[in-house]
Length: 407
Image (cartoon, rainbow, N blue to C red; front, side, top):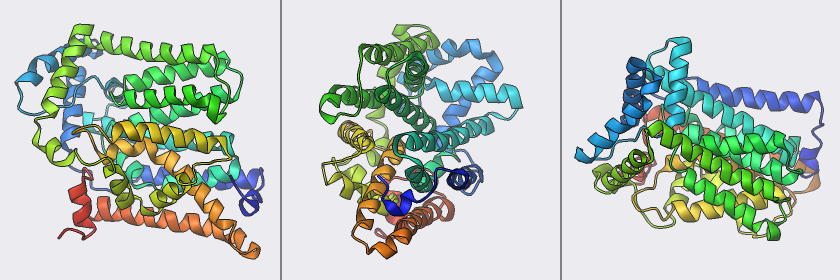
C-alpha cells in the first residue's frame, strides 16, 4: 500500500512514536468537548430514560424496561428508540455504578470511550494488515473524521455500534489471515454477539461478513474454514439469545421490533429526513468528507486491488452500501460511521497511487502533505457543522443550509 516515500518510516521507536502522537491527537479531538453538548437531544433523552429506569429499579429490571416499551410504543404517534440497544445502556449503567455520574454524562462517557477505542482498534488493524506507514496515515485521516468526533460528544449508539463493527471486521481479518485458533475465534464470536446486542443495524454488517466469507474463493483474502463459519453463526445466535433474555422472552422482542418499525414509517421527522435515492449516501458523504469520499471513489473505480485489505474493505462497502442505501425511511449519515475506516483506507490508497505520478524528488513530501490537506478539510467541516452551527443530527437539509447551497 505504501510507496518508497512512506515506507522510509522505520519500524522503530520513531515510527511507533509518530503513530502514538497521531492517536493522542485523535483521542484529544474526541474527548475535548468542542461541540455544543450542553442540552440533550431527542435520542439522548430516550437513552437517559432507559438508564434512569435501571438506576432506580436495578439492572435485573431490564426485561421490565423492554416490556414497558412494547406496551407503550403502539399507543404513541411517533417512533421511540427501543431499549433493545443493550450495549450502550448497560455500559452506561456500569459507568454510573463505578463513577456515580448522572445518567446523561454516563451515556456520553461510554460513547466517547467507544469512539476512542474505534480509533485505537483501527490503528492496530491497519498496522497488522498494511504496515506501520499505512497505519500512521489512515489513523491521521480517521482522527479527523467529522462524524467520529461528533459521535464521541453525544450519547448516540452509532459510535458504539461503529466500534463493535470495526472490532468484528478486524477479528474476522485475523481469523482469515492466520490459521483459525481459539485465541482469534473466541473474541471474534464474542464481538459479533456484542454487535448484535448493540443495534439492529448489525444485520447489515452481518450480511457484509457473510459476503466476505462467501466471496473469499475469488477475492483470495485468506482462509475460510468450518470453524470460522461456525464461530460467525454462533456469535450471532449468542447475541440474539442475549436480546431475548434482556427482553424477557422472544414474543416481547418481536413485539418491540414490530412496534418500532411500524411507527417509524409514520414519524414526520423520519419521513422528512430518512429517505432518498440510492446515491443519497454518496452525496451526504461528499458534503461531510469531500476529499476522503472522492479519493475513495477514485480508488474503487479501479475495480482491481493488489492489496488484500483493499479487496476486503471494497466488498464490505459494496454490500453494506447496497443494503443501507435502499432502506426506505432508514437513511442517516450517522449510520455511515461503520464506513469511516474503509473509506479512509481506500482514500490513502488513492493518494499513494497519485504519488507514483509525482517526480521522485517530491514523493517524500507529497503523501504527508496530501494526508495533512485531507485532514484539514475534514476538521474544517467538523468545525462548520458541529462547532459553529451546533448541528445535532446532520440531515441533508442541515448540511445544505450550512454549506450555503440552500439559503
